[in-house]
Image (cartoon, rainbow, N blue to C red):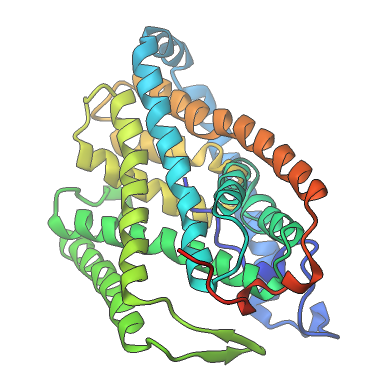
Length: 348
């Protein structure tokens, strides 16, 4: 799921920090706490998951996997492929906004590659470091790459807010008992998400033509039209992911409930620093749907989803990465195009 992109570009290896002389000891307290608190939290959650692994009906999960027809798996794979392909369009939005000259096909391939590695190895490797390397090989500077990553991150979570806001505010999905959140508060959270998404579009419309200087970098919001494209593309992507799980569950769980659980699992994956959210996705689904679907069938669906949405695209991402590296070696960028954001808009 596209949830682990939330890592600032300056945290990536190989991307130098623009603040010379900044020492770790001079970092704010919350940054120093985050360095050890998140890994500890991850280890605690992983330990809890492992302690409950023996309670899972693995035999039932294997039987459920064997019962899937090849045509159903192909249909799910098609949905997963469409989701990854749509995610590649996030960087095309960044290309349109920053007006750099890297070809569209190359931007799309970089985004798809980074997403596949992001899902399986975490945001540090996929979402940030790989993008930084591949775009640098294409001739873009750090500031432009930072804007592309930022827009991709905004696109992903704005679409999440739109979809989650609609699902939560409608009252179709009830909050889990473990959350200790009332139905009214749950709906209010959904309304707040919708307001944030709408507020972003309004802010983009009001700030058209304005820019700000942040740490020496020129930043500006996209147009309102582009903001609407961000919302539409991302919302469709989230819907595709939930559709894949819905098919694997054989329609035993209503689509909106499946979508709501997917959204909850995505948040759990963000706050738990485990690569690929390994075990987190399964734990959330087991906790929220254990009364609706047999555990074996549910685990079989989740294992199939992880294979088709995470592992298969990783193979494709590795192939794309090798092709991109080979192309970059054969076509080094001219030095004059080192700063793509300063180039005039390409013809459309």
